[in-house]
Length: 93
Image 1 (tube, helix red, strand yellow):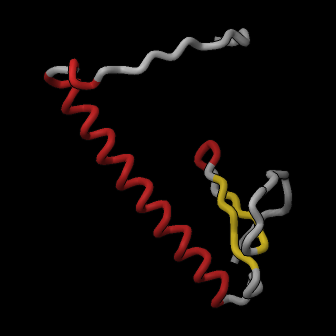
Image 2 (cartoon, rainbow, N blue to C red; image 1 turned 90 degrees about the vertical axis):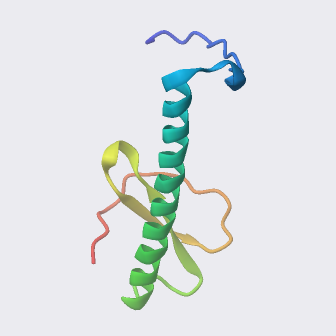
């Protein structure tokens, strides 16, 4: 899909799904929820560790990027609503 055609999305009536499709959808949703919880737990612990190491100020937090399996962080002021991505130096403890 290299050309920039607009996709025509259709809502799926999930009550019409049967058998393995229903089971796989339920498994997918369950794993997505577990993944989201694990991600939130990891990010909270990472922020906590940076605070202990005094690497971020009390008015700062971290924004996380997980593109292509690589972890990236950016310092943000608490309360900032918009975060812009850019390529910057590595973050390490």
